[in-house]
Image (tube, rainbow, N blue to C red; front, side, top):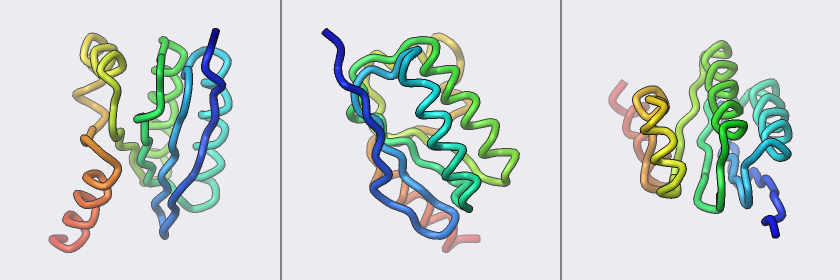
Length: 122
């Protein structure tokens, strides 16, 4: 039995959007995640925080979607930050070396706080 996958956007503010993922982030879910993230970027939110606390499984398709989103965000002068990464996904990021490219925080609040700290010190 698979977890029903869904996407929420619980927060937008200026160029920032938080995209929260729930369920199995696999070959069937990855295109929807990429599409929603690219819509957010096109709508003026190129700085994305991906809340992964609700992800129960992630395969290479999910990882590929994150990489594609990161590239598109960078092309739009934005970024992709990961938050609340489940242990299994953290290991996948580590094994592939993506943990050195995609910044990560323990929670969405920590990611937003770091962003706010960077804005006030600039």
